[in-house]
Structures are given as structure tokens and as C-alpha cells.
Length: 271
Image (cartoon, rainbow, N blue to C red; front, top):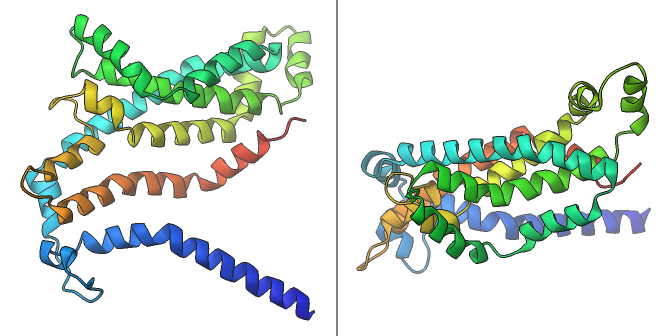
């Protein structure tokens, strides 16, 4: 009994320590977004201060962050939607026909550093006059979201018994009909998992937007640069902008948390 109590106390202390390490940067960022520039750079740090909304007024009043929200939402939603349209049939094919070489090829596209695609993308889109366009950013973000969809869903489809679709095909249904009416409805948690993770990766993407976007299609991670100048950094504006960027991703994760966990765990083991 005493040994069990000690192990329980140790477990909760360990969890508390990890939580403090993980949450401290976010708490610091959130608190700094309500501080003045003087309070942020003061030393020793001020833990008791008079909060102000001035930084958020700069973000949404002076910098037109709603436009950047719109750009990030459009690019993320369309890139994830197209990735699902292409990735779900590909993942099903990989799962049912054991196309391991294709799976490895798609996974390599995800593992390759994104910077290796920047120069080819830049040359192609500049020649096609697609720089600073939604098309360029959507296609570049699909390099992130499409492999995620295929990787998650090919494993998830493997957990669904073949007998379910085969019985429908015996009754006269085509494989395509069985896929849309039987397999996809059963794959809800996996689809939600792939959609959530893909959208978050697209939402937070910095590199492609930095090179391929300008003022028209600037996304939220790039908009943070508006608070950085040659002479100084507006740390309050940076912190408020970071909170505004992280908030939708956190809310989305909290809403679909149980589906994401279920989708990842069910797809983790075949059978």
C-alpha cells in the first residue's frame, strides 16, 4: 500500500513537472500580450502588472489581421479538402492492394525538408505568373497535408475488415460504391484526425508563405513580421499576434481531441 502511494505521488509530480515545462511558454506569451513594452522587457520580470488591450488593438485594428485570418483559413481549408479528395482513394488503394512502394514514396515526400521544394516551386509559379496567388500556396501546402492524409488513412483502412466490403460486392455493389457507402462512413475518426492535423500544419506553415506570398495572400505566421522593424521589435504586438494565431488551432484540437486520439489509436494496430 505504501509503495503504491509513493508511485502515485511520483507519477503526479512527474506529470505536473512536464505540464509546467510545456505550458510555461504559452502562459508567458499570454501574459506578455497584456503587458506594455516596458513591462515586457523589464528585469526582473513583472508578474504583477496592469493589463492592457493595446496590443490586441494593434493586431486587429492597425494590422488588419482579419484579412490574414481569411487567407490562412482559405488556404488551409482548400488544401486539406483537395488532399482528402486525392488522399482517401490513394490510402484505400495502398491499404487494400499492399502498395508498399507507393506508400514509402508518399512518406518520403513528407520526410523531405520543405526547403528542398522552395526553389522548384518558385521557378514554376513565377513562370506561370502565379506568385502571390491562392493557387500557389494551396498547392504548396498540399505537400504537407496530402502525405499526412495518406499516411494516417492507409493505416486506418487496414483496421476495417475486408469482409464488410466484400459482402457488399457479392450482393452486386461495385468497389467504388462499397468504398463510399461502407468504408468512408466507418472511417470518421480517422478522417477527422487527418483533417485536424493537416489543417493545423497548414495553419502554422511559415516557409512556403514566406517565399510564395506577398501582401495579397499573406498568411498569419508571416503577418507577425509586421511587428518587427529594423530599429526595434514590438514584443507586445508579437505576443498578441502569436496568441491570435494559436487560439484557433487550440480550439480545434480541444473540440476534436477525442476523435483524434481515437483515430490515432485505432490506426496504430492492424487487426
